[in-house]
Image (cartoon, rainbow, N blue to C red; front, side):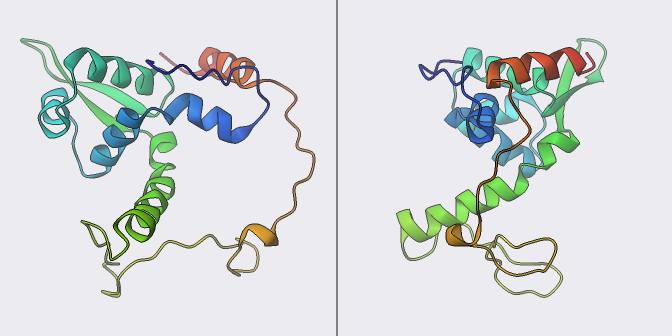
Length: 165
């Protein structure tokens, strides 16, 4: 995917996520997918990314089950891409990354402000415990030995074998 990093031998969920969505173009494609961009030409126009790079990233996202390719025109055949449940699960990651960029790169607020439609208040993402609702910071979590003993490469190979074509 144009990267030199190889996470395939690690046993790490962060590395596994990076293996699927760690390319910068991939994250921007996903950002736009959440903004209802669905077609190749729309992404190409919005991002200015080379067509071969965009095609490769879309193919990878489809291969990993993050996007689903759908035929929208028979003659000539044209496809659009829709987020799958797996892809929609990345929403919190992207919103949190945007908040980090607003806070630490733009410093005074970023180019987009998220407003919660239900109450009209500016939205600030938080990490909370699902069980008790309390906000969680780095010092509030402890690492325990997980169940995975397979490497990122093995896990991706297994999930690719399970994914429908």
